[in-house]
Length: 214
Image (tube, rainbow, N blue to C red):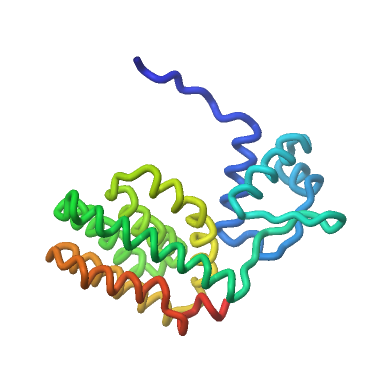
């Protein structure tokens, strides 16, 4: 039976637009947001904005405080460490599963992303490169073919995408990140799982990198 496709509701449209604005850096971490301001900007009533705020708060992209208002999320060093610890655990598990299930397919998929990354780097298109950075890691989760693992990963995925956006001004990080993505792909292609995991762990958890200086 074919699923019936329905148009997005107004609330879903507002959620997607706000999420995009946060991830792409239009709203900086810690920025206060008001229902009235967003409703006026998007030319909608406050009801879908209120519902969008509630959803994005569940996703962790917004935080609210009584008598203070709603704010774009921000993380301190402890919070960033916590996120990276969870991310390492999930991505290492996903990488191991993905290699076990289809190393050739994973290597081919990662190669496709790396090729697009190379084009973005050559064009000086940091915005596209950072979007592809997110795609690279999501590809590993997709190829692990474990929906419960992916559900857990999504709790931090948009936060990581938001933090990546802020790395556009850190060329050293970008260059090192690019080389590490290629190295992970190469180790997967050679079915050197432990070596690929070692690079991935360093890639995510390196505490002298730009994430800790944002």
